[in-house]
Amino acid sequence: MCGIVGYIGYRRVLPVLLDGLKRLEYRGYDSAGVAWPEKQKIMRIRAKGKLNMLEEALEDFRGTKTTIGLGHTRWATHGEPTEGNAHPHADCTGELVVVHNGIIENYYSLREELKKEGHVFSSETDTEVIAHLIEKYLEDDLEIAVSKALERVEGAYALGVLWLKQPDILIAARKQSPLVIGLAERECFMASDIPALLPYTNKVIFLEDGQMAALKGDSLELKSISDRKPLNKSIQEIKWDASMAEKAGFKHFMLKEIYEQPDAILNTYRGRIIPEKGQIKFDEINLDKDAIGRIKRIVLLACGTSWHAGLVGKYWIEKWAKIPVEVELASEFRYKELLIDNDYLTVPISQSGETADTLAGLRIAKELGSYIISICNVLGSTITRESDGTVYTHAGPEIGVASTKAFTSQLTALYLLALYLAQELGKLSSREIGEKLEGLMTVPSIIKERLPAWHESAKVLADKYYSYSDFLYLGRNLQFPIALEGALKLKEISYIHAEGYAAGEMKHGPIALIDRNMPVVALCPQDHVYEKMVSNIEEVRSRRGIVISVGVEGDEGLERISNEIITVSKVADDINPFIFTIPLQLIAYEIALARGCDVDQPRNLAKSVTVE
Ligand code: AGP
Image 1 (cartoon, rainbow, N blue to C red):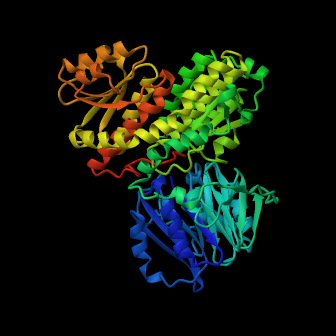
Image 2: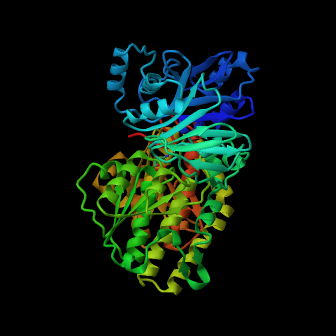
Image 3: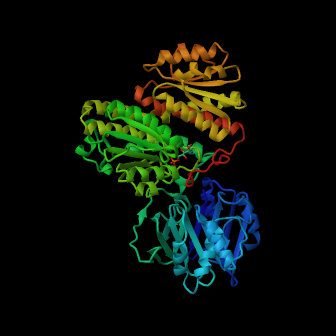
């Protein structure tokens, strides 16, 4: 998704813009640009490619003293990734510039209207239409012109606007695409996401849909776009500091985030459990026992890795709370006939809280009367603000495109949700809940202690298998979703074709794939389907497939039938998903590294898919 940074204050603007854009690189982009007022005109420098190309283009402007400007990294949705399509975009005069994240759905009709009125366009983008539309309404007040223009716009936007004739004000506006305002002493920032603000401030305002802000450096006015009515500001304090959003010495954000999982899991359950009493506290759910008693079905709604978390959550909720659960791919859910009513609980699961399909599904479920509890990692994100309650994961900023700590934090939230529902419905005794909480509380230390050994094993496996072009991941029961997740990790950062499969399905087709060119990652805990899993492994071996097992330490029988093995601690069956996931993340990471892939920003992918 595109990245927006805007600044007005006392600092030289170009270093602030470039620093902010660098912190948003994880959002995925293919070109970048900045704009600022200088010597009675708006300077606009853009470049295709990574930010270093923009920095080169800015070489001659290092001495710029201007303290207001806009920056942008573009993830192309309309128009090729070229310098001409890069933001900021300008109106006919070149004195008004905009940066935008989102999609203007009626841009074509607006562009035709503006062309008829004499506006000349220089790009293929939908964004440029906004610049000319503001110009159309521009007299002597930028806010009024922006308000009038946006009333004509259909679609999604996070917008930054700068006009040469009012060089002491930046306008920010938002509808469906995230935009956060940072506040500090004598300076204001706008950005698409929190990491761009953290070096300067942790006091933020999340713009809501239909809101605009006039940033004036030492002050900020929040208004509604439609009538410019002043609005109250709700300033939030972000607990993340800048270092959390840095790599902290790791080679990649993804590796840092894999190693952060013990803390992410701990921070997600901390304050929500009383193990000695076998109790879960979930005030944020705002559901009393009667309301929970009326839930006849739960829908877990998500995309990608978050959907895999939902598949695991289903096992726990149905097993402990005895409530039927459907796990829905949001991109399918939003376009099909739904039987949802007000006896449903819908749980959107989203790291970013901005995924377009999941947000659309939330809105449909809400419209049909469902109560909405989201599980999300980003405070104040759109999905959380449209939910009746949110169970926040506390994984901290997840910068790597491949989701890791957010996934295990989502598992933690789902584990607690399943226990909470069971508690409120009286399906589990406090003793049983206490035991399960004790099991959960062992996870952070197990991961922390075993990570280095798992990492070493992953490096050895990567050296041997990084050049293979196909992988199969097999799991049963709680490990089936983990097999899907392991395969997704590998494919999205190493570009190797990898499939996750229910091991019991092998004989229904996939076993035809097995030969010496097919490494098979088999997840084989000593649970109630262990023997079945061992049979699957032997079927693979007998067809000369390469078996890479993840199994319990000391399992000599498994070791004998495996080409390779990574061992994990023996834990309760329900805890296995937390543990088995980590070696798979490391295998994907090390193989991607061995293949020279861009681990944190894999090709074609973005961290948050805020468009369809
Ligand atoms: C997972 O590694 C991917 N980055 C992707 O599948 C992601 O999980 C999916 O896009 C959902 O994102 P969300 O959790 O922010 O909604």
